[in-house]
Length: 449
Image 1 (cartoon, rainbow, N blue to C red):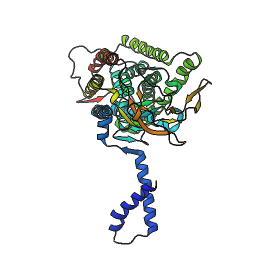
Image 2 (cartoon, helix red, strand yellow):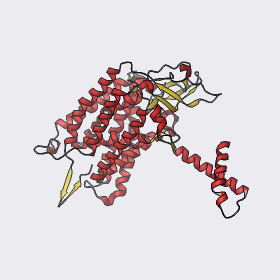
Image 3 (cartoon, rainbow, N blue to C red):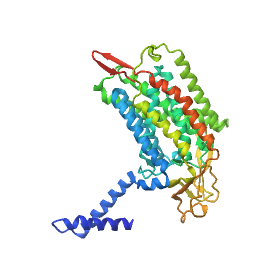
């Protein structure tokens, strides 16, 4: 904008050009100013900073989530780095998967279904907070992967085990994140209509299939291109395997949507919730059957156990305590989330979506300011409690949304606590199972994952 150019011209003239021992022509000054403004704009798109005090005042739970997930990311990295070998490469591959999952919205507008809250640092045109790339995926997928590996399951059962664990660990996060406006889902997309506690069932399906697909592809690639025993000299092939596994795993997840979810939902009109439960039940049957017939003695070690409370167990404890405490003390009606959201625009504009089954589905392109009725956010914190309106013909993308109170607070508490207490007991049983190691002389090399 003109003001940005004027401000940059003033700063360069005062602090740069006047300090030079020679004169700079006006044409050169204008050229340098233009380049500087372009650089600032690009940097601003890549990473936008926000005053933490604003988050403390308006959205403290989100700031707490950023801090906690940054800590969890560090703990998972410490675990991967300490064990080294393929643990570390797997952690890197999961980070590539996080980048791909968050970046897919820029590839096709049809996949632009999620708007994150604005963090202290927000990347990619203020669309992705740092913890979404360095935090959530590492905590959910890396910890699930390591726990599934400790079960010593055959590779065909390990993928479903990882997918099931990802959903079990992520479900309370999905519930709390939606209620506290850590993110906003598309208001009228057909894939988002079936929800549980404001969480689209299709997203739980996505979590399960992503964990399973990534694990399967990674196993296949390592069996094809790497020796059974880890060799650090093959680091190029190791990196290529995890990189390709991240990309192909995401693609295979898309194939699962096409082959399973869309036909059952669009043609047979079975709800996304039931389809997701069927998939999760299938994963559970596969994993439990493989575990019950597991002949590996290390899967159920006898005798004295080694100290098992490592970085991963610490991360799981922090993750559990954070959400169990937050659901007890937070007041979602006090949340004020200012940032990029689904645009507010004309109510009569719709768009057609082509589905893999050949049917055409319709969704409203914008949020209708006059006909909005959503359970997990409204506009009561704005003057008059009225939704902001678009200016002119352009849709309004940056605005404020307000959290809503719990309709049944104790039901939310019961769901979060019961999920963590019931499944948490089993998860810590997995964490107590010792790591797989090779013993060579005086050295212990981490077994290939």
